[in-house]
Length: 56
Image 1: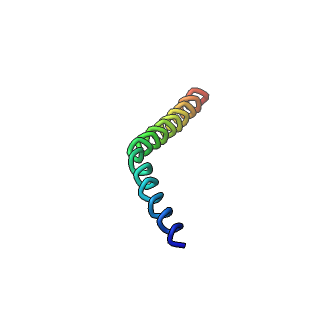
Image 2: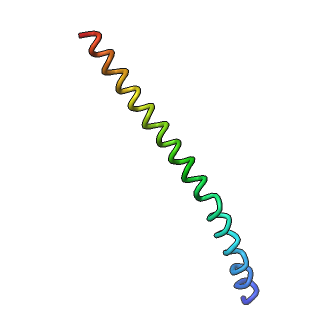
């Protein structure tokens, strides 16, 4: 059992480091995606409103 414990301890910090490094980039990408989606939604809504006005 001691060998297994040592292995898990050695593996954990590496995983943490990998997760920590690209976290900011990932967050930025996610934010960008969300922004694009919201912009698309607002544009669609605006287009629908203009169409409605024209029909009336």
